[in-house]
Amino acid sequence: MKNKKGLAILMRTRMKTSTDPSRLPLLPLTGKVNQMLTDAKGNAFDTSVPQAAAEEAQGPTKLNPPADSTSYRDFDAVRESMHSAISLNKAEVLDVVLDDFSEGYFSLSFENRRKLLITLAQVYDLNRAQVRDLIKQYLGLELPGGNASESSTVDEEAMLSCFYRVERNLRQVLKPAYEVLFERLNNRPGGLKFLSIFRADVLSILAEENIASLRALDSYLKEKLNTWLSPAALELHQITWDDPASLLEKIVAYEAVHPISNLLDLKRRLGVGRRCFGYLHPAIRGEPLIFIEVALLRNVAQTIQEVLWDTPPIPESEATCALFYSISSTQESTWESFLSNVSLNWLKERCPIYLESFPGKSGMDVMLKLLTSTKFEWISSPELLSALKPPLMRLCARYLLEEKKRGKALDSVANFHLQNGAMIERINWMADRSEKGLRQSGGIMVNYIYRVERIDECAHSYFSTGHIHASNDIRRYTLGV
Image (cartoon, rainbow, N blue to C red):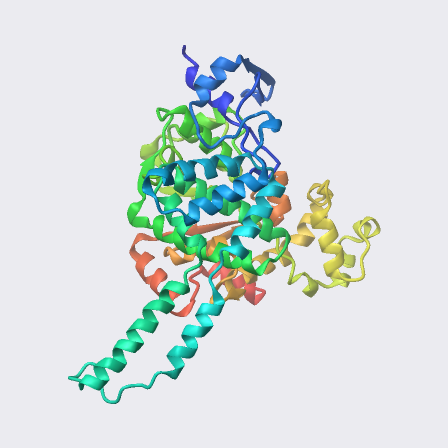
């Protein structure tokens, strides 16, 4: 079948899902798979396949619960399974218990997952009574005299032995009991994938309510994942149309910066003049932890439309730059803190008619209403675009160059590029007129440039002093020139 790969991707991918996937049970395909997509001309078309074909395309998985909600496991049973996964030590039954817990967790509703996670964070936290007792013991020990590295008397050796014993015990009791669960799951096939979904649920809860014990659990799990997902264990892979449909499905589903609209769009991003690279981990086969999309161009693009082209690309031999235009994670970049500096009188002088539709007590109020209006009326007015460009470009430059957190760039995307040795080259007005681009950053986009001969220098100065390298054009905005 000529279009077998495309059919498989259509069957496996939920295109442009607006619901947070971490807050839903992972349900398998049932009945028919109906995906509405658009072809190259923008016409909608429907694909429907029977259940057997859908199951064949989807492949076996142990992470999905039964589709029938009546089959969902009882909360108390899953909680007991979790307790057994932490407390049991018999190797012959531990594998069965861990599988039972994993399957049970995915069968829970999100509310019951929330209850289970809070239980895990609070009941299986470290024993602070033991910590306090050991600290008291430690403080009660008498320090040996002299330098411990030199030859010591018998009494000094005995005193040091007491210190070593209490320190060893402290290290043990400072580990929460849930560490056992994390370690055991990580050693199981599919466990690392499970833990990544597990943490996504934790973050969803913390986004709505600040629970100290759950935040501590998240911090602990994050440290573990940082160790297990170290760069040394990652494999760089160029993703092409020849890769399995299951991998290409992930690219479509996880692309969060510039959504992939249809199969033709996907093929373009993997074809001539384009590259896609992903980092894969041996424990999570067929799913990139992060992927980046690249366009080979004659010149650095000023708008995203130049990158997401509809016409044939240039011959690759004519390309002079590689433009990294998408990384899989979404960064909310709408920023409001400096809008209070905008003068209301300044806006009145230039665009009085719009103040009737968007009244406000200050320039901040008016500009916020303009920029956050659901219909984005402001982009239809040449006068308003002209009036808003100077302050917004200056504010954007100031945000990127001057607003910091712990000595580093406040913007997480900027921090990512700067710590890798890039410099801020250019900010582009109305570079992304899509609804998402207007909502997130007022249509402004940024070019970060990596000059091979300066990458080490830029990265070192940023790490050591927080200095942000930028072009003179960018810095002129902050000076009001």
